[in-house]
Image 1: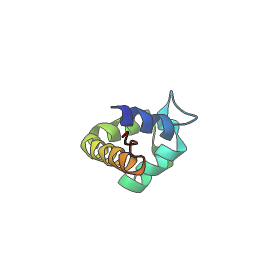
Image 2: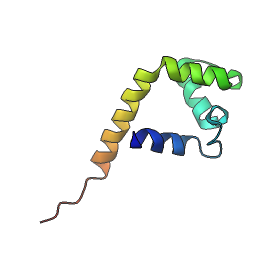
Image 3: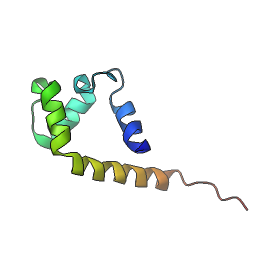
Image 4: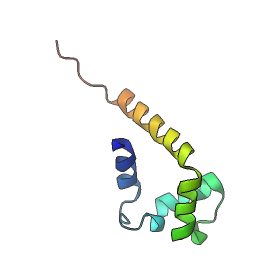
Length: 77
């Protein structure tokens, strides 16, 4: 859950209260699903999020794995 919130916080910078207006998220949806970025509004954004929730969950799991790999916890002797 922490990684989900962290990703959404970073990805929606400047549009945190309205993530469907974020140019970055629009671009990501456009490249993934083929929807035109200028056509993505409130309903299209949430419809995409609901429809692809399993894939988004897998993506967030992957990002958390990569984050743990890139920033390992220090080992205390």
